Image (cartoon, rainbow, N blue to C red; front, top):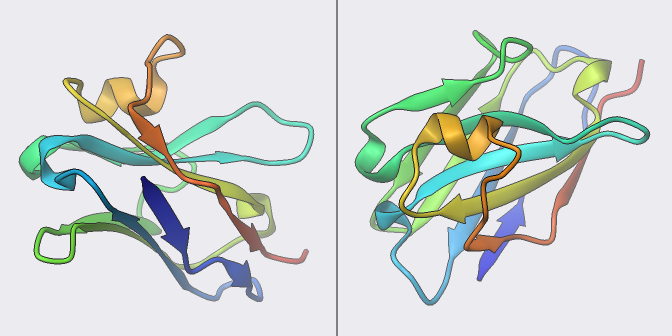
Length: 126
């Protein structure tokens, strides 16, 4: 089970940190990532990290602003979001899968997820 937290309402230019904590399995064995879906738009892979942190993926729209990291001791993956824009408004979902890569987890439309969270809303007003 994956549980997300950290979403909320933030002004443009502000920051949020999303957390994704796993229970029942060791998150470090999985590729973990954040997908988002805005109203009326397709799902987008935002950022993903491979098992054991070998590689990461960032969508072009968030490069330089978002950073993904893992705390093995807490069995948690974080998404630090800085310089937030109104177009970042969406429901953010944490997903995990293995075996796969960060790229596939975020980009592949045929990727099957082993687990995903309930989603957390991020709202950045225009």
